[in-house]
Length: 77
Image (cartoon, rainbow, N blue to C red; front, side, top):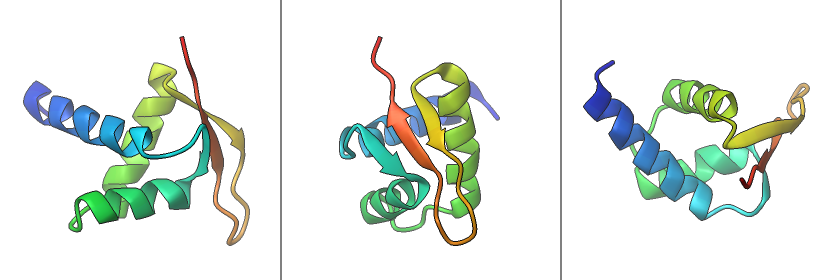
């Protein structure tokens, strides 16, 4: 993946996160992303959530189980 597409993805996910509260679920992320950009694919969001966790922007506070999605929290530095 090139740097330009990574920057575009990062800006898009920052926009998505801006519109969410401090705590949110993976389903909330997906819904907001689909509303902002209807063609958004779930696999793109999964990769992006992993990147956000690795960068420290968000942290998982509850693992998803069955039909209950994982919960996340924004981290403020």
